[in-house]
Length: 191
Image 1: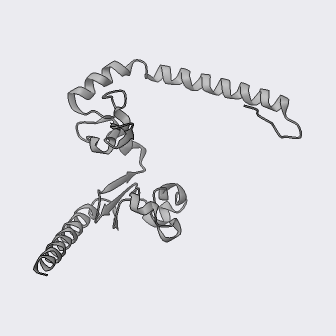
Image 2 (image 1 turned 60 degrees about the vertical axis):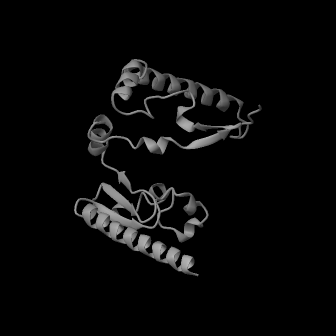
Image 3 (image 1 turned 180 degrees about the horizontal axis):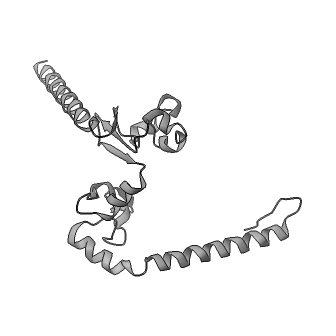
């Protein structure tokens, strides 16, 4: 009985500590951006088991509510979800801010733990994005710079433009061939 009482006291103390810490983070962040206090982050697995009609901010809230965005958050381009349990999430909807964040890795480092999700492959656990080894997405710092230097040329703006225009050309060609085969506006595509 004493052990149970001790465990309940520890659980209560931890919960109070988390609540105080949560309120402190909310107060600190709300001075610079719109803050939404949540129990768990929007993509939490716990939220997958709760029907979306009972949630305002589920895993795809930003797609469902895109037209209501300015009504809910005003002109704020940055919205922070401060989670009581889990990690805090910041959504950025400003093009200049996104460019600043994406092009300044020293000032805005990635949380590489987010890329460390493991999947079971046979008897071994394999990190999803490290399946072929470390790469630009999963690295930071000097190692990232080396990988970025190696991959910069093939993923240049010129090559991206070429891939884009070729994709448009082939998709247009495919649609034209399907239109020729259409019967009453319906196309039957066989395997």
